[in-house]
Image 1 (cartoon, rainbow, N blue to C red):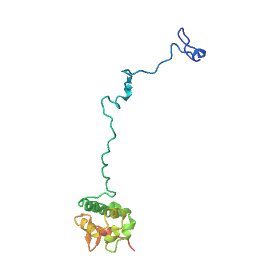
Image 2 (cartoon, one colour; image 1 turned 60 degrees about the horizontal axis):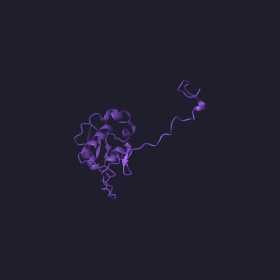
Image 3 (tube, helix red, strand yellow; image 1 turned 90 degrees about the vertical axis):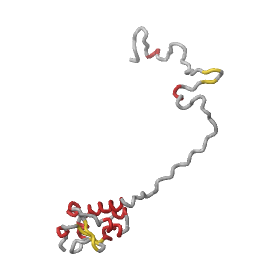
Image 4 (cartoon, rainbow, N blue to C red; image 1 turned 135 degrees about the vertical axis):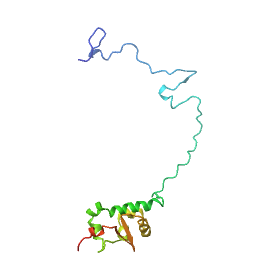
Length: 159
């Protein structure tokens, strides 16, 4: 069934007929041959604006550096936090690789720690690494080596 069947309804066979004249396009008014813009363009076109030649664009802001520069005070803190994690109880319980790097007294070379990817991303300066660990309560530093403070014997692997 195509549609409503009532006194003023329509049927499928009469659907092609139009009642009244065809609709005309909308007229937006105006005078002397000038037409006003349609209402949906009122936010774009404003009467009275000057539409002169295009103006040059202001210079674009300079892009950020490709590698972020961390402050000199934050890098030692990040280093200390990362290396303290390496020597934490939780990590040493699972990290066989780090325990294999320990000598018979639990020391690990600073060059070994500096080769770890997360430390390498922060710095390759071994002096900075050693200096950042001086205030650490977890890691002790001596002669270019480091180990867990206090309980280092617990983590030695018997060879």
